[in-house]
Amino acid sequence: MSSSADELEKAELLGTPYFPSSFRPQVLLQVSFSSTGVSAQLGNELTPAETKETPVISFVTEVSHSNRSFGQHDTDLTYAVLSFDPDAPSREDQKSGPWRHLIQGGLKVKPESTEVTVTEEPLTPWAPPSPGQGTGPHRYCFALYKQTQTILPMAEQSHIQGNERPERRTFKVADFAQQNGLELIGFNYFLCENP
Image (tube, rainbow, N blue to C red):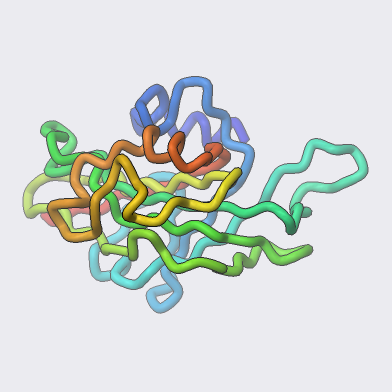
């Protein structure tokens, strides 16, 4: 999946605290907004109106075992997705970024499918993009992780305090992932702006 790693580099996301330079995607993460029929396509432009509803997550895992083919899943594994905007309030001034848009754990892949079943309530419910007017395009990132443990409840989190707007600022993505036993395996992103 070198093309997606190339896209990360092109978007100036590779080598950041959320996507370390050693990261190589193992999964094709799909993010779609079913009521508007749009999806994230590694940096395509979407509008705030198109991305209001909670996104639908699906993915295909790459399997390296010779007796299994691409697209098959280990149904015992659980995954989590984090969504954030590193460009808050703008790409030139990221003092409030990354801004946390979604933390959803407990994702299970149905056998022989890319369809995902959600088995837990989100720790942070979806907050749609709302880039400030005239702040240019923002990169709305989705990072997919393999869960090695259950995501801790809000009261036990060291790196987030709540889900109100001010509490979603300066999300320490890597620290959160480490505390919650998350192993980065995939990503996608789209651009969104308010001209």
